Length: 239
Image (tube, rainbow, N blue to C red; front, side, top):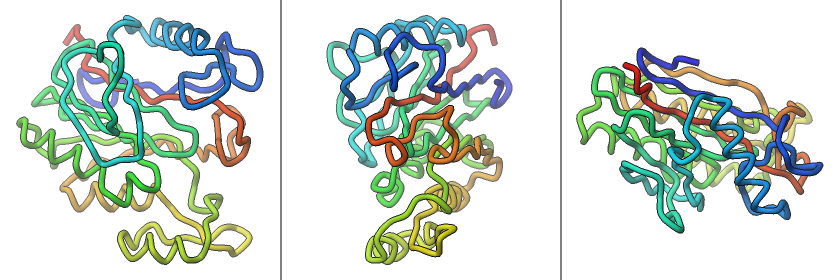
């Protein structure tokens, strides 16, 4: 889909890959799936999205707030970080998930795009606003940016201990939530939306699917043993 003029994005699901059950189209993560299957799934998915498999940047996600500019895929091993941004046309940025949220950012005028992996820790430590700030330093304007927050565990399903909810809401009040069973929960989507709004964004869009509820998506909380889907963003080289 087109997120903004000249900027494309896509979100994969678990179907159509080469990995055996329960992995399917597993694109990464610490799983028992054969890594050669992961590589084949990544190549297959890239081609289906119209991307060159060797022009996709994958992060070594560690639940941090660290972000970095990229101009090409990493070499033998990606550094530990959870946000990347680029000005390179045709270079796709990918964020893996299986309950955590991907945050995709685009400034179509400055021609800068970014992707972040924002789980509980990354959200509370501010990986998404860090990515906005880094892109702004390079010439993007938050008021001109479009954001897409990808599928994630929703605030009605993401149950946590009461103490964790208290501690998290003390940092970011908007994450406070309650499950349908009236137990403590966190709403990462609401927290990330609040962070982006405070950073100056007004065009914030959502792939509002809940990973725990939607069987087409991987969910660590629902399945424990599971794969990872990915959200991608890239500058269309034709524009």
